[in-house]
Image 1 (cartoon, rainbow, N blue to C red):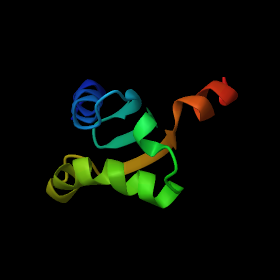
Image 2: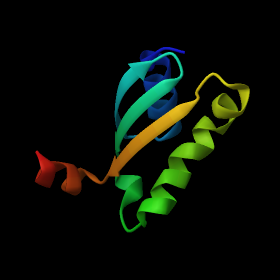
Image 3: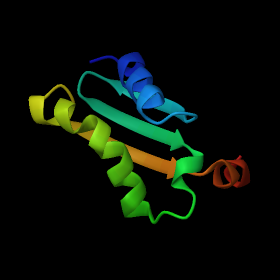
Length: 79
């Protein structure tokens, strides 16, 4: 699986999000910035992302995922 495919899938599945993907093959590092994370705890945010990746993980297309989930204001503070 290519990083561009993961990026496109998540941007389509989480409308209005900004997705940065590093890695290739089956090991990816994700940064997802979305208004949808507002008020959600980190575990809930990860669950919101994993629900779109579960099929790919189950099939073995993706083996390892490390993610950072941020709201736009959190991302701006980190910049």
